[in-house]
Length: 408
Image (cartoon, rainbow, N blue to C red; front, side, top):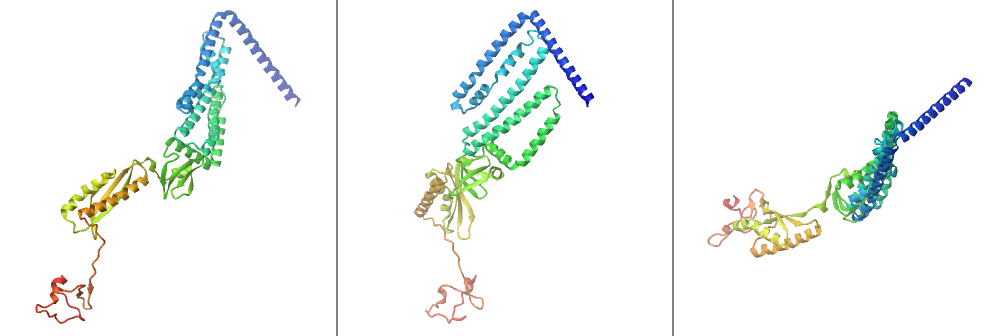
C-alpha cells in the first residue's frame, strides 16, 4: 500500500509540475506576443469591440420586433424572441474569433478562443432551435384557435422535452469536438430515451397526436365534425383528449390518438349541404308533362336560392314514375338547408296542384278466386245482364263466371 501511495504522490507532483510549466510557457509567449504585435492587437481589439457593439445593437431589435408584430403572435414575433435570446458570451466569442487571425495570436491563445467559440456557438444554436420550435407551436395554437387550458398547460412539458433534446445534442457535439469518445454517452441517452418512451408511451402518443392536430389542422375548436356514429362540435383540444359536444347535448371525450385513427368528416368546411328527394308521379301523367318535369323542378329550386345538382327521371316504380331531385344549399348550416327543403316541398305541392300533376299513392289490386280456380270479380259484370233484362242463372256457388276475355 505504501508503494502505491508513493507512486500516486509522485504522479501528482509530476502533473503539477507539467501544468506549471505549461502555464509559465503560455505567460512568456503571451508577453512576447504583446511586445511584438501590440499595434495589431489594439486594432483587433477595436474591431472586435465594434463588431460586438453592432451585434448587441442588432439583438436589441428582437424585443421591438416581438412587440410590433400583431401583439406578439406572428412569425416575426417568434423570430424577435429568438433574437432576444442571443447570449452575450456568444457575441463576445464571435467577435474574438473574427479578429483572431489578424493579430497573429499564439497557438495556445488561438486554441483557447476556438474552443470557447465552439462551446458558445453550439449552445447558442440550441437556444435558438428551442425558441423557434416552441414559438412555432405557440404560433399555431394561437393563430388557429387551438388554445385551451389543457393544451396551454402542456406547453410546460413540451418545453421540457424540447429543451432536453436540443441541449443533449449540443452537449454531445461539444464533447465530440473536445475529442471525448461520446459513443457510450449516445448509447446511454438512447437506452434512457427508449425506457422513458416505453413507460409513458400512451401519454406521448396522445401528446404527439395533439401536436399532429395542431400542425396538420384537420379541425379546430368550434368546428362541426362527424366520426363513426357521433357528430358534434369541438369544444376543446387537450394534451391527451379532445372534447366534443354532441348535437344531442352530451359531452363526448375521446383520446387524440383514437380520434386521429378514425375517418373524420369536418362538416364546417363544406361549401354546401345536399338534400335529396324522390318524387313519384302517376303513370297516367301525360308524356308532355313528364318531359317538362325536370325544368319545372329546377325552376322551383332556383326560386328558393338553391342549386340543382340533378333533376331527372330515376326509375319505373311499382306504383309511380320516380323522379330524382338533388338540391345544394350554399353554406354548411343544416338548419338553413332543412328550412329550404321544407319550403321547396310546399312549393312543389302547390305547383303540381296547379299543373294537375298527381303524386302517386302506393296502389295494389287484389283478385279473389273461386274454389274451382276461376276469378271472382269485385264488381258487377255489365255482360252478366241479358239483352232482355233477365240475368243468367248463377253458377259457382252463386257467383257469375267472368267471360274468358276478362280472365285474360
